[in-house]
Length: 124
Image 1 (cartoon, rainbow, N blue to C red):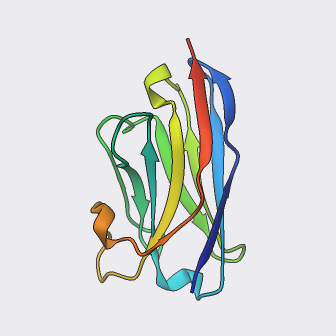
Image 2 (image 1 turned 180 degrees about the vertical axis):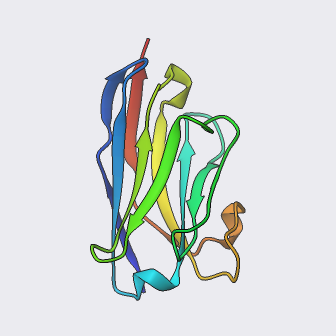
């Protein structure tokens, strides 16, 4: 069993930055690919970013490419999402998730373990 706990959300003005953290416990963290997803009110949860178990590969949704960056520190069992140039449409609850799939995946169905989410609100 994996426990994931997100932190770092909050209220920020458009154009600002936030860094989300996701601390993992209960399993060998380095064996999982990690993903970030978000869910805005009235919308489905969507893929935002992913980072491979090695940290050597990252993938991003088109809507955040060039603005968000995923990273991980296996010594701290933590994955991060650095968010810059935030837009009001980035407002959502952000979740981290873990998958033991062979390859890094953007499919929400492939992620087995989920955190409780952290709210990000971007004001215009």
